[in-house]
Image (tube, rainbow, N blue to C red):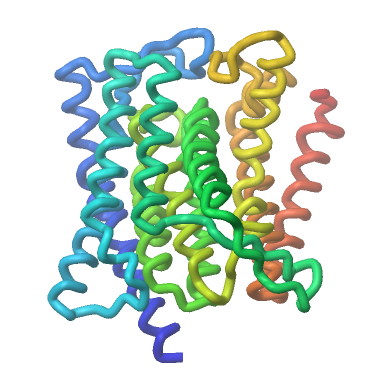
Length: 359
């Protein structure tokens, strides 16, 4: 009980600090971007009708790592306790995030080839695996409680870990096509992982997930349509990378080993959207990295839904996946979330599909 109380206070503190820094920094970035021409310009794959400042990723980066770095300093000073030796790699984690962020930032300004971006993502993911942030157990106990976790070979652990991290980075990046979409989805996913972290008493995961929640809350204040600022590739890559790492930090806990099925379920909306897009591109004989308008949000827009309706629908789908992922941790809470999301989905379908005959 004391640890739960400790984690609750920690989460509130992290959430407040990260959202505070994001809230106060973002207006300055909007002005800075306008003065120094940091804009994202309209094209056939962008929903905004005029140029918009695209350096919001800076405030998200500051929001997350103001918390993580402060936590590391306090840990070194023995002011707070983290029951996981992974905190020792936080300096390297910060450096790797800086690489991911800088790559996205450069791409926003000057454009990088998709292949080079992927190489950098895979290299950064490999570094995380080397430092111990890895998936090395597969757990099927959700099928039968008598099943023990399976230790997977080193090479398979490496491949799964690297593909998982790079995959989530790109899934979140590709989802960032509308005002408020990627930040809202990341907020919901990190909120779900925060709940998991509470139940398994993993306070390092509490710090990471709550700092992401806070940063997304602060950023969304300026990112909802019509957005005053967008996160750009720098922000979406950063959020995807840290969400993937947080999911692995959760999976290191003895209370929830293995990658299946909970991490996959909570990320199911961006993952399935990414896999569907890749399949359609390959079917057309194109590179999986070829940009197009086959993402879920574009398909919904083509069916005459407004941007607001699309956002609500995708948020509801993510909340539904979050609900299912929580069944292992709290049946009552998961059931409440599941019923709420299903009711929301039914209302949405009735209101915008059957009643208005949009389809």
